[in-house]
Image (cartoon, rainbow, N blue to C red; front, side, top):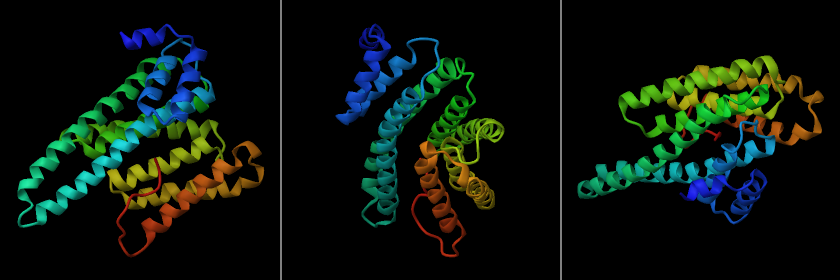
Length: 253
């Protein structure tokens, strides 16, 4: 009922409310407003609208991914303690609650992508953006899902990233921040989910090298974003190719 009421608001009003919610750091409500304006019409979303939708979900999912990682680490430490066994079950129950929230949110954005955003998109840049998002949210599911569900989510993530990669190679410049962001997250997927270090390094290195050679021609509009992502690619390469295994997550969303 609440969501139906939101759908009666104009797209402009919903966009304004989403921006207000972002400034107030009320990300759950930002998701509601952004989801509502994304379902509003069959028109393609503007770049600004796409970014607001992305920021909204990134925040609500990101905070829960961070919480899950903390609990996962505590669970591992407790299980090694002589007297920690009683606590392990408590941690697991709490962790499963966060997994339910994560799955629900990931499924919401994936449904939105499949049923509203991708079918209404003809623009190559937007398609890369959405297929990358699809790859990201299936990757997040594969981080916490159990065995068979984990493999299924990983395969869907791979397929989505590949779809985005093929369009990006054909239609976007090597220095385009969306293409670079895709290479960043796709390489993290290879490293963390498929544990294919060589493939991850090759992808990150190729994206970095291709962007470097085109950097003189990059527009002012993209320069800051592109060089920031290139730095993250290089940081990951340094981490992945170092002899000493290091703990911690690779850069990427």
